[in-house]
Image 1 (cartoon, one colour):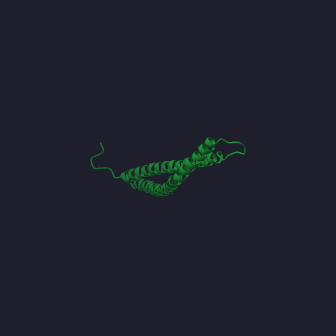
Image 2 (tube, one colour; image 1 turned 180 degrees about the vertical axis):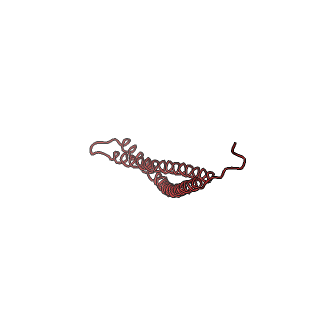
Image 3 (spheres, helix red, strand yellow; image 1 turned 90 degrees about the vertical axis):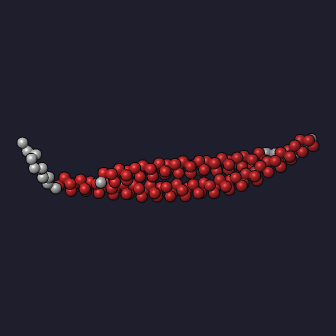
Length: 138
């Protein structure tokens, strides 16, 4: 009975660690998504700041701003694939975290049942009268 109780306690600890690991991985994935989205937003704002202002401009400055705008647009469009993949990865890891949580809760319930069964077994064992062995008295 004690062995079963120890085994269930170990399973509870393992499931808890698995849930913590899954939570950490999901948080990292969410952080990657946030970082990529923040970078894309900065590219958009930087691109917006390159709009020509009214007044006299040199052709070289206008050409340089146009070239930089094209590169920023290309970088932003290139980031969309990375953002989509990061969101998909974050979704998968969030599902894995939920599955790990469900397994953890199941293990906790089994651990509680094992503790209750062990307590009941001990009560029954203590309630039964013990016989003395023959030849044990002096």
